Length: 126
Image (cartoon, rainbow, N blue to C red; front, side, top):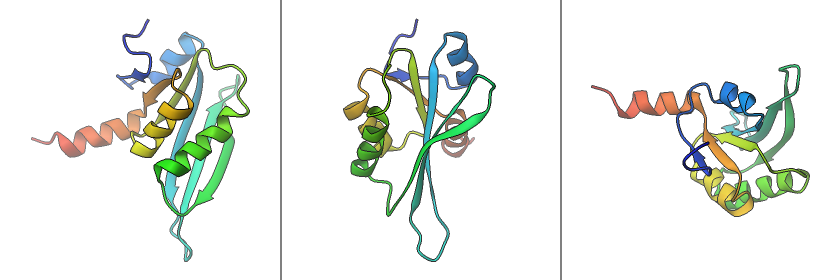
């Protein structure tokens, strides 16, 4: 179906495409905390059968490094029994990509349409 199963490009409508082909979609991202202590909030979410978003896992860390993402994805791998037709979507952060290659080498890794559009706007201006 896809030319390169490990990197699914063309993120527009990815969730609809994934549902059409019965993919189990997990979205992985992080955000910097703007509190006095700082740090990073890591989160994994997905949708249930009623189109409701729910949190699979979250964690707090000091930074967004490859070692941390590998550990976080390894925790997810420990509870997922079926990897067939699974799609993990993220922003193209190198730490997430490295963790995906180490922990989920055979799982499709998609690019978040929001982050892709922002990168295109930022780097492809006239």
